[in-house]
Image 1 (cartoon, rainbow, N blue to C red):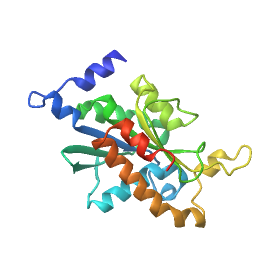
Image 2 (cartoon, one colour):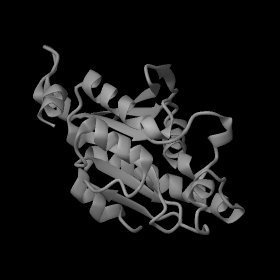
Image 3 (cartoon, rainbow, N blue to C red):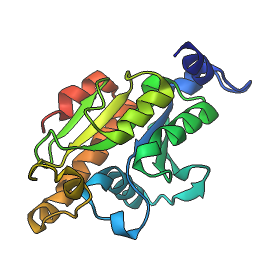
Image 4 (cartoon, rainbow, N blue to C red):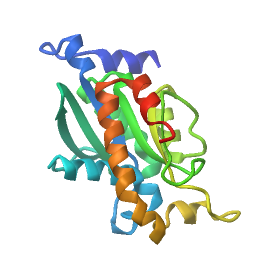
Length: 208
């Protein structure tokens, strides 16, 4: 834990502590490949893609993922979609945190959550992985569960033993029609996280 934090806060000669506090890493979790594109498990990718479209950003394939940088109200927000597949997401998260010298508190993971009803959005500053393999790997790589996560509810309308099929399944027509408004809310949450801070963003968006 100490070694990770120490690495995250080591900085380049031209970067001040104030500069580092204005840099953010927002990671959308998902699986690469066409067959996963429109699945519930890929909502992290979907939200980042929506933000990129809204702001005319273009992702570039770099080490361990696709990245783009978004400048917003004096903040630098690096958007990352790991290409390691969901269960190994932590490797990409740790690499880019350390490479960009981003403080741990400026990390936001965007993920699906079967424990929340469809469309519910919730920001948390820490917590358990809740059985989510992507979050488990991030926790293992960072050696801490104290990082912010934006959970997007996908519901749990599945029978016993059908969880994997459900999260890797595509949205229902009803969900598809509701997704655009939820994406807008998700984009607003990300912008608020970088500008208004975690507590204010939680108060504004949680459960909305």
